[in-house]
Image (cartoon, rainbow, N blue to C red):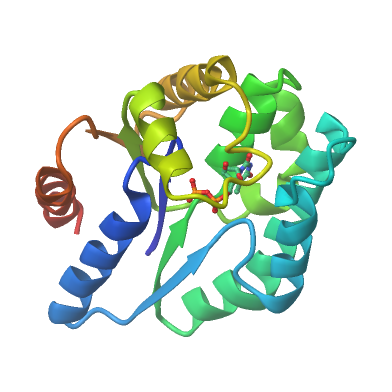
Length: 201
Ligand code: TYD
């Protein structure tokens, strides 16, 4: 299985993935945890270009293409081989991030960004866990950690659009994307997600 995790800034994805990974391992599932942008040496170098606050002039189209390039490298080098070796791959962000952030929030168009990502379309996640939470609270949490990147530093309006984008994707891919209400404490979020995962597997 290929399971991706999506959500806005500070939505608790990273902690959640750790908990899901521990649960699956206890059940004897062979797991591999990875993230986007990045996940391989070359893809991590592309990540650096995209997230660097110094790159203020990066155009929206180039940003979308770089996310797609990083994803293609990650797919070919890591995700596809791991799936072929029988691992269940857990990925922190994937295609839907590009659709919500670049396609919807940046305004490039979800269909245009889907075209940029045609290689990822050949390897769609089995399930995508989307944590739906208040962008204002999440952004405050993310910014309070320090080290905000170029995307974190976008306006609250941008992050509100990201959430709208995800909600549109839920309508577009209702079987694949599972929405979890994330406006709760982390323990409750983990409990809700594990309940869903148990139903799915
Ligand atoms: P990161 O620090 O990994 O964010 P998070 O902890 O919230 O997952 O930074 C990745 C940023 O890149 C995040 O703001 C989401 C954004 N992003 C896109 O805009 N498009 C994409 O395709 C991906 C994978 C991420």
